[in-house]
Image (cartoon, rainbow, N blue to C red; front, side):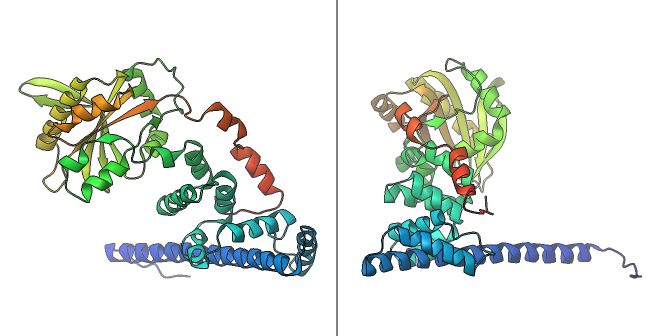
Amino acid sequence: MMKHIPISDFYNGFLDNLKKRVVSSRYKAAISVNKELILLYHHIGTEILNAQKTHGWGAKIIDQLSHDMKIEFPEMKGFSTRNLKYMRKFAEEYQDSDFVQQAVAQLPWGHNIFLMDLVTDKSDRLFYIKKAIEHGWSRNLMVTQIEKELHKRQGQAITNFKDKMTSPQSDLAHYTLKDPYIFDFLSISDEAQEREVEKALIHHMEKFLLELGAGFAFVGRQHHLVIADQDFYIDLLFYHLKLRCFVVIELKDKDFKPEYAGKMNFYLSAVDDLVKHESDQPSIGLILCKSKNNILAEYTLRDMTKPIGLAEYRLNEALPEEIKTNLPTIEQLEAELSKDLELTNK
């Protein structure tokens, strides 16, 4: 029988450190196994390509190869005809072996298949590869970001950050914002007023944070400020962990008007004085409107004293109908993949 040892703070810390090391090691082991699998698939795909070019083999050789590999390695589930064709396509799409090892090998095979199927432009695909690695996107989340065309929206908000902030903070802040923001996860009509949108966003906070992007931490809704014995309320207040600053968000259910920026400038001055810690970076503002005129917005923000961004928000899916019709759903792709692959990392 194990002798009872009194639990001390030291022991608790000791155990906690060991558990963290085990978790870290397991994660690294999983990453290592995945990398080896991706490199193996790239090698097989490259060999198939070279053999077909050298010997003039047609598509039938892949059927034969699938049959023979399954017999030789019955415990492995990655040698279906479909998956071997994906390996061939993988090698054809990524001929730079260094790039495969340093970038795409960090993503699970299922992610790589979806990227090849859904994103044909190489530069756009690189954008999603980097984002998926940086933020640890699940396969479904990555597909959602592709469907919402994140690569076209990231860093597109109109801002005065370059003139009001120091570099590189200004560049990072500008790239953090999008235009437009898509709130298609809200079950409200397109004519919903700003308070209704605000309440719905709070109710769907997890999805709201995903749309805002990595680094945003929710502080409060209708954040109360008392200035000169008067009450003021900020629609939404966030803190950005990477920018190390507060982010004030104001919702407007109408077209952008210059006076919105003046009010935001006032709020930012108040937050910097009353809320911001001395170690924080200056606060930034984001005005979300139903629509905006870019020229009017640029003129308005030019002489504001505080860093302010302006973007539109949409309550409906942004993709054109013809694109939505042709784009396969997650369920369709899952059904196809499940016939041939065992994708363990979601």
